[in-house]
Every structure is written in C-alpha cells, then in structure tokens.
Length: 262
Length: 296
Image (tube, rainbow over all chains, first blue to last red; front, top):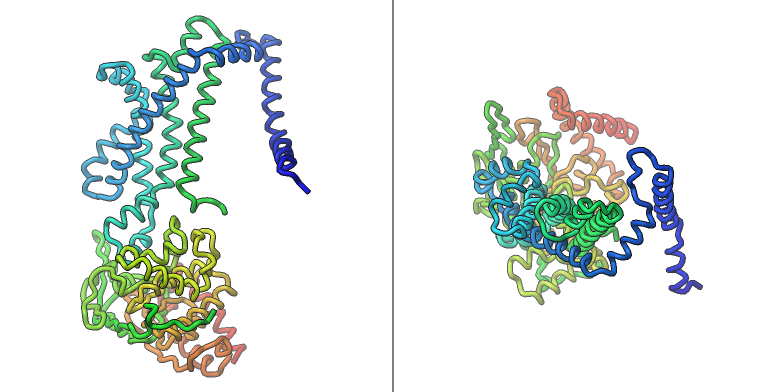
C-alpha cells in the first residue's frame, strides 16, 4: 500500500531529481573553486555565499520587489500589445492575398532590424522613457508573432478547409473553427519565442534608458562596483524569464488539449 | 451493434444521386508548361452503385475528385449531379480524403456534428443523429477523444461518420484505407462494404489495390495515364452481400486476371514515362501477377 505521501516522497527523491540537484551542487562547488583558486580574469567573481547573502538581503527589501514589478509590468504591457496587434495582422496577411501583397514587403524590410537597434528612435519619439520601453518590448515580440501566425495559417492543410466547405461551413465558420484553432500552435510558438526576445530587449533598454527595473538595478550595481549584486540581478532576470515562459507553456497546454499525449 | 437504422433517424436509405461527367477536360497551364490532366473524360457514376476508379498514379484521379466535389473547375465539359451542374463544394458531395481530414482540434463528436452545426440544424436532432451514427461506426465510447488519440482505423470510421451524418447524394472516397496495416485494412473494407450494402448510397471509391477494387465494386473503371481517359468499364457481378471468402472464388480470379491485363498495359506506359509512383505500381502488379499464377 502506497500512501499519497509516500508517492510524493518517491517523486521528490527520484533519480531524475537527484541528478538535477547534483548538477546544481557541482556547479556551485566549481564556482567556489574558481574564486578560491583566483583563476585569471575571473578573480573579481564573488563567492557564492556572498551572492546568496546579498540575494537574501534583497529579497526582504521592498526596492528589489519594486524592480520585479516594474520589469514584469513593462514586459506584459509591451508583450500583450504586440499580441493584440500582431495576431490579427498575421491572420489578415495569412488569409488575404491582396492584403499580403500590400503589407508584407514593408514588414519584411523592418523585420530583420534587431529590436535593440530601435532604442535611439524609440527614445526620441516617445514622450516618456517608460513609453519608449513599452514600445521596444512591443517591437521585440511583434514581428515574431506576426511571422508565426502567417506561417500557422498557411500550414493548415487545404483538405481541412475543403472538408469544412463541403460540410457547409460559411467563411465565418472557417475563420473561427478552422483557421483560428489551426494556427493556435504557431501562435503559442510565436509567443514563446517572442517572450525570450522581449526579455533581451527589456534588459538592454532598461540599462540604457529606464528608471528602476531588474536590468537597471543590475547596471547600477555595476556602476557602484557591487559585484555580488550584479550576480543577484542576473539570476533574478533568469528566474523572471523562466517564469514567463513557464506561464506561456502552461497556457499553451490549456489552450490546446488535443496536443496532449493522452 | 447491428441495430437497424430507421429513416426517421435522418440517415435515410434512398437519397441517392447520379453524377454524370461529360467530355470533361482539365488542363493546367503554368507559363510554358502545359499539363493535360484529363481529356474528354466521360463517365456516369450510377445511382446507388459503388463505382471504383483505378489507374496508375498521375492519371488524374485526384483532379477528378476535386472537380466532382467542386474544389476545382473543369477546363471544358460538364459535371452534373441529378441533372444540375456542379457548382462549388456542397454537402451533397462529400469526400473522405486520402490523409485524414478530421479537424485535429475537435473531439470525435464535434467533428461528426460539424456539418450539421454549421448548417444550423436543431441541436436536439443533431444529438440524436450523432449518437446513432457514432454507435453505427462503433465510436460512441470514443466520442470525446481527439483524432490524434484514435487508431488509424478509428479515424477512418470517424471520417465516414462525419460524411454519412449529412446524408450526401454521393460519397467520394480517395484511397481511404491507404496507410492502414493489412489487418485493419481488411476489416475496414468489410466494414465499409457492409455499410454500403446497408445504405445503398451512390459511392465513388478510388484505390490502387486491385483486390480491394474488385471486392468492393459494382463497376470498376480503369483510367489511362496522361491524359486521363476511361480505358475500360468492368461490371463486377459478384453477388452481394460480399465477404472475404469471395476473394478465393473462381469468378473473382477471372475478373482479377482481366483487370490486371488492362492495368498492366497502362502502368507500363506510365513506367516508360518515368513516373516514380508508376514504378512502384508496376512492381506491385508484377508480384501480384505471380501470386495470381500460383493461385490459378
């Protein structure tokens, strides 16, 4: 007889978890060793415990959480704006050949420009720094979602559309019941990739132009020569990015039950 | 599971259609290239009969289906259903595609009722019809599963159900059992032939498999390789209801030998012109000729 608690313990102490844990432990030991042995070029690296104590101090301070809030809200505002504009645009380009002819060339000229290259213009154009950062985050996610939605629409097998038409579907039904769910996997992919790019852009933008935020604090730690806090900032950014993509993965699984293995 | 369906259930016996193709031509022109897919193709797909179409790959079978279903327009000639010209897709003429065309994001139930829903049929009526047809194809217990979670044979049955619930005047099947393993394929053939014999609807069935073709058909039509034309029409007079024992009957063997002769000629032509698929078909035919000799 296995109690639920027994099962949980077994899950916690499974070979997989232990392997994962030991990889982290090994990494910390190696880090410690690098600092201890004063490996050339890495002698400025703080000890893990230094970083840990700075991290703990940060975790109980309100300023640190305000930085989290600032970064997350910038991400979400820019990201959601990109989806709200990008998904309909991608659908329109994917569905209408005429619309595609008018818009796609311009789109393809702007798309290869790295989002970070937009920073100077963004700062010049928008009245506040905050707005420029929203805009940059938006750019980071926008082109990726559009291109993915276009691909998603064109990947839907023509047989499915034909079958739907034969069964009596009107264009309205085709859109809501075939094209939209059919391109959902690509929409989720576009969101996931876009989220990654968005964090890159946000951190760069914050370091250059923002007041507050995880990127800005990390930069300020550098200007104050507070090396342990630089690492705290980096780890925080990593965790934030990870949380965001986990959220998207979860959303994707919820939205596409047919993709589940069973 | 073999309960009798009453006409009141809406899956009636008697809503047959007759499709007539008259001198149908289809030409694809692409800059300097010009492909005559079909030329002067005339055929009557008879009311309530199961017509099987065979021919080497590239003979225009799929184009033919697309035109009957209304997905493509013929370049010349006319296609009529019960005297009325075919215009665009309609639930009068439903296709079961080669690769599954079930909507992956809908459950089996939603797939089956899709047609009825978009046509605005009363929900209570839809539910009753769907339950009946799902039980008929043995998928009632699987109605909430997604297509990806079904076996190949179940997917094919779900697709049949999705078409049959709309009571089409003609049901077109484009190599529907391709890709199924041999055992499932035989079971599906027997299931399908039973379904056909029960409902007696007009069916057009496309296949590469000679045994499948003869086993199912009332009339077997053999097409020529580019441009596609009717090479021969063979009435298959095997009695109905049919079962797999007939595959060993002498009449079956006789028809088979005759059909092989005709097919072999066309496939060789396709082979000579270098079509890869034709190469496969000639190989398959050569081996089945041997087996025929042994059996004879």
